[in-house]
Amino acid sequence: MKSSGLFRTKSFLDANLIWKLLKIDKMTILIKKLNKFQRYNHFPCTWQLGRKDNLWKNFKILHNIFPEDYNFIPETYIIPEDQSQFIKAFESNPEYNWIVKPVASSRGRGIRLLNNLSTLPKKCLVSKYIEKPHIINNKKYDLRLYIVITSFTPLKIYLYQDGLVRFASEEYCGVNSANKYNRYMHLTNYSVNKNSANFDKNYSMDEKFTGSKWSLATYKKYFKENNLNFENMWNKIKDIVTKAIICAGDQTISTVKKLTPNTNNLFELYGFDILIDENLNPCLLEINLNPMLNCDTDLDLKVKSSLMTDIFNLIGVIPYAHSENPNSYDTNGKNKYQNNNNSVSSLYNNNIFNLNKQPLLMMENINSLKNLLIDFEKNGKKEKDNLKMKIEKDEKIQIEKKKGSEKKKEKIIESIIEEYDTLGLEMDIGIIFKIVFILF
Image 1 (cartoon, rainbow, N blue to C red):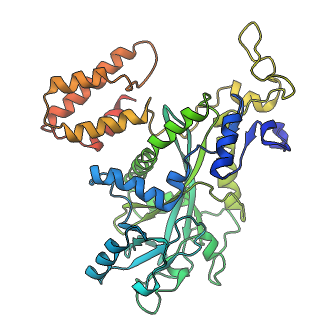
Image 2 (image 1 turned 45 degrees about the vertical axis):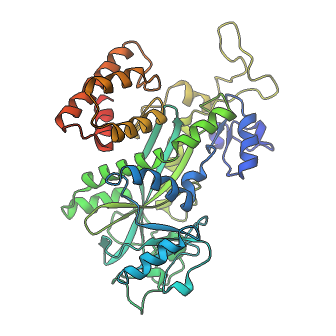
Image 3 (image 1 turned 30 degrees about the vertical axis):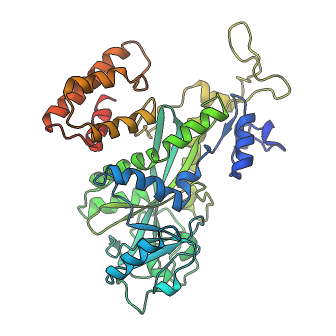
């Protein structure tokens, strides 16, 4: 970063790039004061995904409408709000095991399997425990994947093509009374397992199938050598990422509009924790809004330094002279205080957006997608002409603001109607995603 001309400032308001998780009130003040050339690494309402209880609440809303599509988080209850429902589920299913998590904690702190109702905390989140995970070397593991959002209007989601595979440090043998409290067997958090005597720390980049932490590239290689279908699983993960982000779209869009007119100010790095079950189906465990970027090993350094390099290239940090008015422009409409000779600004000027991490989904307005899906669910038996008329009148649906956009809109409508006929008037969220992806 220093070689690119970046240095620390004493004030947030003097910075080009601000990387700091603030409390809601301070974050709101900061975002309001940002000028168009500043970049801040959080959206307001980021806790709608980054807190376990908020994630479940937002997920549940869409799960109730689309249960077949929003089925990638295990059955969950928030205590004390859902305590009566949970007690009923607990007593009705004695064969189930449940895992307790604090609603706003990280790094595995406070997570444990529930022994009985008398040990249930007064405030927590409790989920059905996935007892049959996919195991490698007889150990349970999860995936830490990195997702970057650069905009909600249009929605732009980037999925980093590398990541980390984090293993428990003791062999998994199911749940029984003897091992129920063994965090080194049931939890995959690096912060937990690095304290185990059995933790196998990776000191090199050798792509051997050993150690307590792998790169995603090594994981892919393992799948290939063991004749496992990685692409199918990866497509399911992309589907989960897209649908999870949509859960918090409404609150984020409305709040951003109230706080700043500069939609390019904000971006977000999320750490998605994904568990793979024995049938290679991914399940979302949680979303981290401040994923750990510490580099304890060469493996961490390789994965995370490349990640950060791509993020800085992607967001385009633009230097300007803070002593002058950053909103002043010359006769050509160019900001006269921008230092185009700086090596950082060259990243922006050279348009470093042709990365390997292509957006999973781009929609002009996430609310339009949500409303469209709900309309299909409620009005699935309405006539095709009414459907066509409604879509044409929906001013929010714009896939691309370029020449020929009207023709593209007609293609979208025709594709929707074609799928509508093919499925006998039964539209669901999967079909909409399919149409959107095809047209892009």
